[in-house]
Image 1: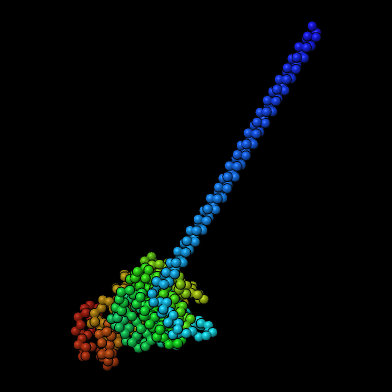
Image 2 (image 1 turned 60 degrees about the horizontal axis):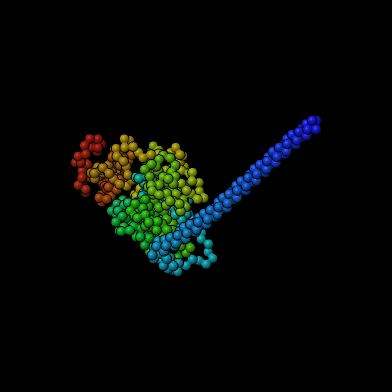
Length: 458
């Protein structure tokens, strides 16, 4: 019995051991299978990531190649368009430039000399810009500059320091004044300027940009050796509005190439372009390139850019400032005093400050807005009366201007235009108080009424 019990016990222990071994084998097999499964998953994931990276690199490579191809194509288009524009800017420009260089050879080994044409801001051979609001006196200012250039000196200096030069040919394109206005207000003086040519608005027919280029080319071709020229476009804003956009772009490129060609031949072409201010421009603040009416890109190639604006509290003064001034202090402000001359001019009276910048005179403060050189709201009889009162010493010009609402220069030109200036001067010199003898107008017979008539008889 004891042996059977031991046998049973041994059998039971052996069975338990076998079951434990069997269970261990199953567990090991399961773990091994899980490890193999995990390894397969990791390998699959690694391969998937590797394929994704390779695909991403290939996509980026293809994208880079496509972008390079597009960039090369665009560059080719730009070069082709640039070449086409150069040939289409002016069909005859290339031939003209070649002929100009042949007839005006540059000096061998001579370096171009930089100098100022009277004014420190007008550098010979460069583009200059001037910005000013309407009725501020742009035309009066540029005509004073033009007369100074043709004389070689400025009668009334408009800069703190100015040079004296050999008189230079000056060509003015006046797109806002006709020949009648020019001859009426400036004719007597401008007629004496042999080197000055002014083209009024009647001169322009069809495409103004083409006409201006042709006239400049003709003048440049006729210039003698070492003879430069100044071109003033008054104003460029109107030229842009009267022309097609592409025409203006071609005009600027052609003019710029002509200017560069002129500096190489020793006959430098200097260009002054006049611009209007935009409607949002604050005239009582320093101007910027954004003050220009229209696209400011027309100022990109300019060497110096000036602006003319109002003086605070005094309509007989103006402020001249600078937006760009290479080699100069553009923070400067110059005060210009209007002078009663024929034609109207200005003169420099001292440095200004930012607080001196002003706005246009209010209509409440003035009976009528006064325009330089353009008489408004005054009859010939009144002009005659006021002139005689001033000449015989009864009234000052300031008093007359306040009552008449126009500048004294306007009264003067009104009489000059009618051919009565010499007659009135003779009568004033004789001590007369009437102008009835030679002109047919007796001061006592002019029914002006009110204060004016009472002053006349005083």
